[in-house]
Image (cartoon, rainbow, N blue to C red; front, side, top):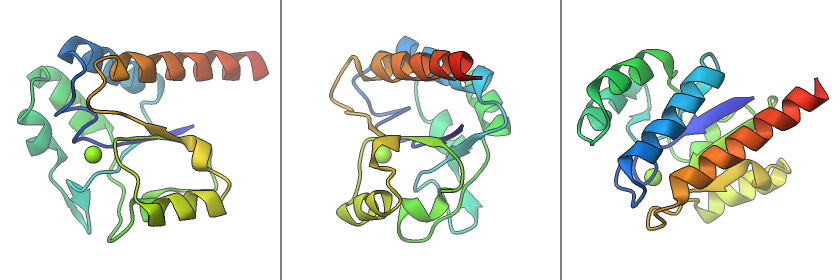
Length: 143
Ligand SMILES: [Mg+2]
């Protein structure tokens, strides 16, 4: 499964405690080391400013460096959905979904693959981690 990860409102600028965001990011890096991609305005049209964005957060520096070296860039110009590989199963963690992006997801039958990260919900990072863990278990049972 590919993971697409936003930064603002998801890894920083969220009401979730930083410990929970760390747990979420650690789980992603451990379980999806080769299939996690940035899908954020900090990484588009050929430039990647994700490391600088993350260094400007409360996340531990060591984790920022590890995430920066492991998570791969995606590319889009207008809609984030341009950066998604629809031929593979994926989960997209983002705090915002434009109507136009929603339409693209719907056209692929993939609306359910977008997980809304409410930045004002202090339980958000915990909830996302619980979802990822349940998906992992489901896959373990299938394969
Ligand atoms: Mg965002």
